[in-house]
Image: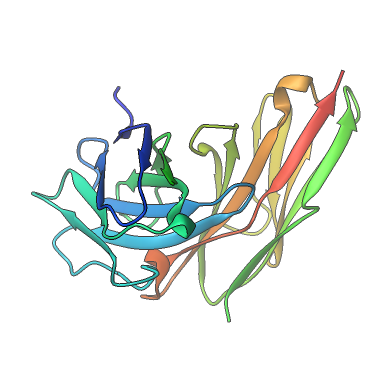
Length: 114
Length: 113
């Protein structure tokens, strides 16, 4: 079946511009995660959605970052006034959210801020 | 503080040279431990879930084991196509941050022919 889909796969933007990154999770998955991965680094947690509960935003690095999940499905991560340090791969993952199911990841959006 | 530590950070093997990767954890209330494989330019790919000490899972040349403090990913007679970064993640049993999931920083495995 279809996996987690992220778009765009690559995004180059100028410093100061806003960007939106999209994630289409696997159908029926109630949990959705966003991570950031800088070159050669581990996964940095950003935000977590679980069903209709309030999202866990504890990993968002600044108020320039926000995310929403509409209708319990598609999610959009927005970065306002991008900075060069925002350059990274942004990964989305979804799971059944039952506490025991693994995450299934998309292939990420590579963001480059020039 | 809950922590997941992977070692070594990088490992170079010759084809056929078996070895093990380590994932040690200090968490309150383990619900499960996951192993993932990540190839360059791709998202992590799920390999195994382990739930309790003593459990083992196998897939081709890989075998994952779990104790109360750590997990090992054993690679038997590796091939160049096993080259990747291997990540472990721990699912904790409390309403903490990060969606109750804590990732290690990974071990980058290179297998030379």
